[in-house]
Image (tube, one colour):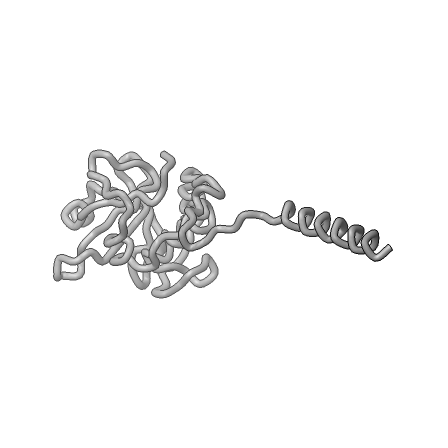
Length: 168
């Protein structure tokens, strides 16, 4: 009798454990690429960037309600629209191990970097949208807008680009 009860208890416990483990969902860990869980949607990133045209610049801002600085704008877009985590600051983005892209190989969704702080260091980033244009949050008192890489200021201060996505 004791053996029968023990057997039923063990069988029931085995069933409960196997059912519970079957319903677990995989989670992203520090070493797991989020792109493997949800494919990057660069079109979504670019579409959302267009929707945010006119949003005020806000140093340290992280939402459409607060406004964005140049780097937080890209962090927000990649995180919310493509589930891709990128470094928070322009300098960290520029130093990252993401693929460096030549100017003649730019694709929509690439991050484009500029110097402009008088010391020759990278200090600004925008999102390339194709046809020689990029969307960015320029500086205090300005709003998110589209500019051309051929504009004399941006052309002179362009440094490089990085690709934080695999699409496009």
